Length: 378
Image (cartoon, rainbow, N blue to C red):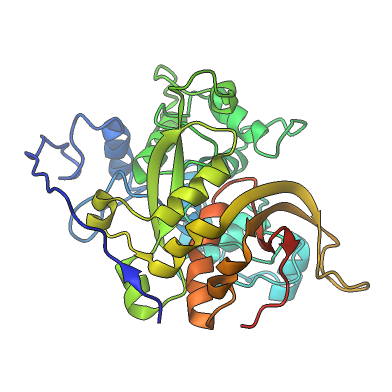
């Protein structure tokens, strides 16, 4: 049974409630995205939660983002029929024909009958999003900035230039050209909040170009001083993950750390340390087994291409994988990583959700003292 840790709380702070916007009680007029949030609410693009709040600083997952951007596009170019212009899944073709058209043999993690199913179908069929090498779409994964940039640029035909150094440079540059990158975005892999999403939609739809905007060069700039910082996202466990043994790590936490060329390494080290007191109060949980990996963790290396160790000739598997992270641990770490099935699944959920949030990581492999570990007991 995984053992979930509670850190010692050292202080509690009480703050006076600030003045709020007319749209939502939790959006102060001083919030940097307040005007944008009021716009998306007035246009019916985004509504609040049942308790009347908007939660501007809460992150958003890929399925939610696809749905909202699709509905924003429909509002720009209204159609008729199902879902205001979004056709239902497999209405004009079979599922197999659809998968063949989008270049996937299987989609492992999408329930096409769920509330988001038709939006994912639309986005895949329109080449707005594409699947990962492992046959997933990851609808529940928190979306990061470059993923959001791709979806926006493809949906609204912002003409990204694709002959660039990285898959996302053209998408980011196209947003830059429309002054759409809020100053709160400080890194390519930063999680997008509901407030930042509203800001980008508002700037695009209303042609707002007089607000400060980041550039691709700013986000890509190397460290120039010891004071430079970057934002990382860690995936801890929610209370529901703990209560249900969900084998998921669904509680994203954003932190600002000193900028480094080894940001994936710094992120993993922070994950093993666990949530801060404030993060714990907000709902983040960790595990004793996850924290124990800190002493045996060596490094993580990211490879643009890597030979598929499980490839079989004449199979449907890719011979070469792209965007692979190799995490190297000392042998003692495998008492946890290759331990009881429930424990190792829960631990790997946090590690892999955190690493796969980086736009340059799609697949995670584990090494034992520098040798790829392949013989899992569970």
